[in-house]
Length: 66
Image (cartoon, rainbow, N blue to C red):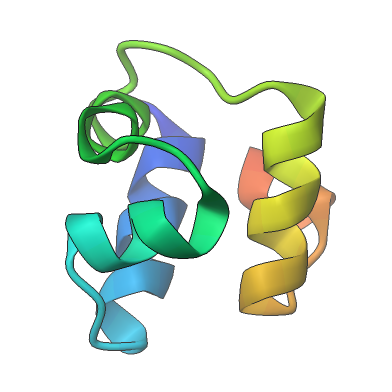
């Protein structure tokens, strides 16, 4: 069970964003968003910070620690 991927998808859908729109906001490719959501790769610390800031959540929340 990949908590980060699930939370990322939930947050993205709550904002009504597709993977392409989120990818543009974060400056990554659409395929990267898909891989993150499926738990097939993890974001760098820099991207994790961007994601947390964009969705106004903590990194602990994204990691399933909060």
